Image (cartoon, rainbow, N blue to C red; front, side, top):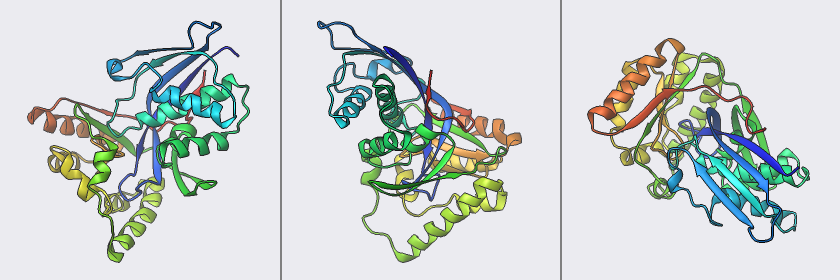
Length: 303
């Protein structure tokens, strides 16, 4: 094989109380095409297209290429000369797993071009090691909603059923929030009461996602580990949550590290929630894209 295209979905992680352990794949995608270069004069070429293409590095610091290199280093082999064409569909630094798509794209393409020496679980282990936590890379690779439990070398991945009547609405503002900044505001210690709160709510969330039980969902999306601290970093958070709930959403959470906000709604309220959330940021002078999506059931595809 001398060329391969890999399609990787966006992800939304945490879902309220599921901090750093639960995530779901969404129907937005980045596409990565890798072509081996049969030349000694050029060892790397990277081109990027899409709305934020100018912000993506086209040298050896590119995360897609770095992941590709780490794949070959894992095999103790020299990475081949390669041309990479990146087609962006997932917004950068918005809490929708753009870095996870880059990591998975580089690893899966490397595995294909090398003749598939690694199995899916080995690719997943490499991806988690690079990303540092599993909540985005696992659903990006596998699709659907996934709960990841364990540690390096001993991960248990549990698929979480997502009811088809539960619609994810993403509100993506034109400002960014880095993962580093979002983690910097988190407390170093958690009270026993708050720990119990999150454990109970995560258990309820798993059943609520499976059943779309409205009473369970309304309660299950609450969290005391990260959202109370991070919401202060997101302009208009309280107003958006009020608008989403008034329009019929079961609840609203921060997607990943933010600033994208995720509303969970029944199908017949999805468009009202989209409109309500969009209007809040528009009235505050903030440009945003708000739209309803679906859960991607396939994960990463090799085309």
